[in-house]
Image 1 (cartoon, one colour):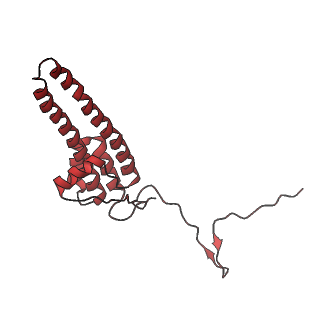
Image 2 (cartoon, rainbow, N blue to C red; image 1 turned 90 degrees about the vertical axis):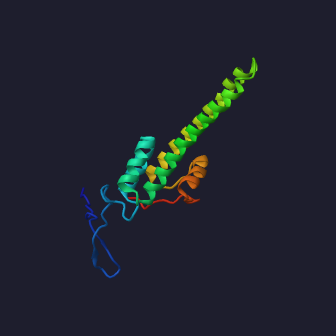
Image 3 (tube, rainbow, N blue to C red; image 1 turned 45 degrees about the vertical axis):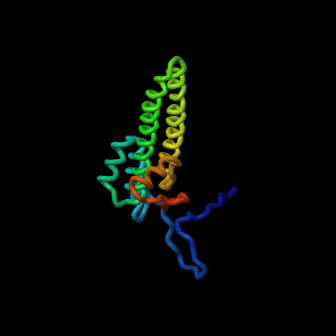
Length: 165
């Protein structure tokens, strides 16, 4: 019984019979090229992991990077949307609580809207964190309006993907 051995596939041959070098797999370091590289992803993710502080750190360290700037703005706007919903409830609840008997009950019931807003933003926060990990621009629906008003920029309507490793 003889064993057949196949030559190792270290190089392939072209049509003319010349050997071409093998393609090396991309490495994890420096795999992303261009303005929105690995560092942009790191600061974009940091904007969601440390909500307001991480966004400001990302803007200070890598503010020229479009991916970092986009996700930092989205993170700040989502935090502001949550804060504004709580402040609106506090102001409205205070006024409604002045109504005898039903007022305090209605004010407490209105807090369910704040909880719903917090849940909505938490889900979108996680989805945006995942898109930052992938290097995509994904807008948070309510926060997108706040970003346009605060920063005067309109984020991309379609998600764009940064070239990956």
